[in-house]
Length: 403
Ligand code: PL4
Image (cartoon, rainbow, N blue to C red; front, side, top):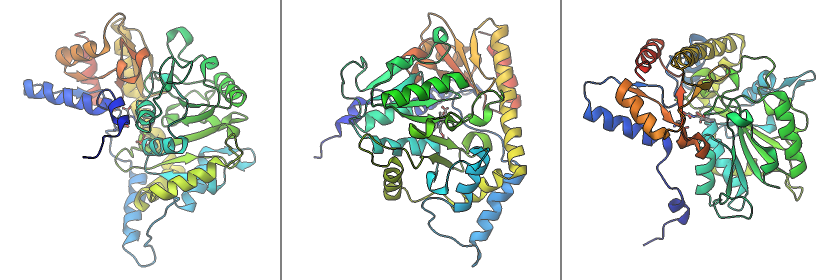
């Protein structure tokens, strides 16, 4: 028989979110009377708002006409790439990126996975600890888990982000000529890097030859106008960063599926070759473009009414986050996040986070996410997601008072 890919054996446990879903199913099977409320996976719950919805419907309708039909759109609609640059990357001189620097995807997670092919198995990768599991698991899948000198963690270096360092990593630990997955607002801690921190990150990346993969999937949840929404607000970032982003969380497109990746034209490898050209080659080879209908919806999301709807949706989930955070604080549970992010990160000192997860499920019938699933520094933390119907979140916070 064919030999198993040894990288598969290096993935120690099941992927975090299906594991949580499995534990929920087991609990529900044992307690058929229970009505479990999920503050676990970060999955949007509210219906699409009308203007964005109409954009999707109209996109589908056009495909049924001779004039409006379109087939493969490998790199994404030109009009959408231009619009994204105008809306999200506009500076005093106008849109900061050309259409050839923006790649439309079927979501940020999918592009994070594909990007890993670009870097290969020998990459020295670093992540914020805790962080979204796809950075580590995807790196392991491509074989980047082999030991390298000085990392202390095999092929992947975990940079702790804890209360002690204000949830911002020690940049001196970044691997020289390596890769750094950085997410702000962070999943799971909700910590959002400020301008000075991002300036330090870019400066260090340029000095050490580090390429930053900046995950801005929650940028539209930032309400503090002093906090940057994109790494490209920082001078020098074009020479050391790629940004992945998504319509999932601001527009409720978790099921519609649409995202984008910015790869600046001038971004170069050590040998002077173009990262942008390689990414176009990888994407062109293994990706056939995002849905035309989803792109029509995204275009609607980026006009004036759509932008207002996205803000309304994010504000709604931020309202949920405020309820969760307020409840935990009343209970004397120390927590961060939830102000510029849809996640609240709660501390249960000295406890195993899977045990706390189990206790919350048993006592409150509330599903959460154990912090340890996001990395070693997540141990004894619980992540609460603010994605839920308001009445469910209100009921969940009442039940949490049983803790
Ligand atoms: C469960 C930092 C959620 N099955 O929808 P996408 O692909 O555009 O974006 C996914 C994504 C990208 N970057 C960050 C994220 O947090 C997410 C979504 N994360 C969560 O609860 O942590 C959904 C997880 C989903 C998954 O595996 O992504």
